[in-house]
Image (tube, rainbow, N blue to C red):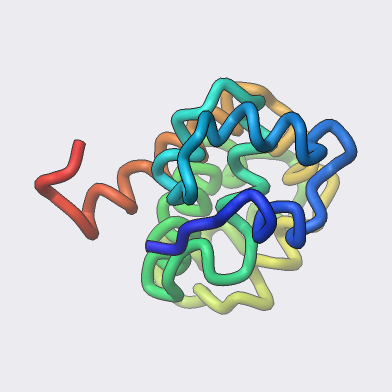
Length: 143
């Protein structure tokens, strides 16, 4: 699993709230933090998710599994009956397996519906839980 030193995290260009002093405080004298450790920090869900989307933070297979969890849940709970014909059509194709392409998922993700779904705090918390579940699948003995 990828880890970051303070300097490596600063090189990722986090928002101004995460300057050297703040990151040093969060690292609490540890030389490196893994994604799993960062997910446990007392920072916002959005900031924890931001780290998880950094290049190399998770493997391509973990990204595929995370995306599948997030999209399938969102499609089942929200998209199938959202009232936007194009999104509902794509949702039915996603669930049937007829269209699981990244381009179709990206188009749906860019819709007004998806943007409002992402903004929901409960959705962000669920995405964090999805990511933790994917990471646990890689290391079943680590809790």
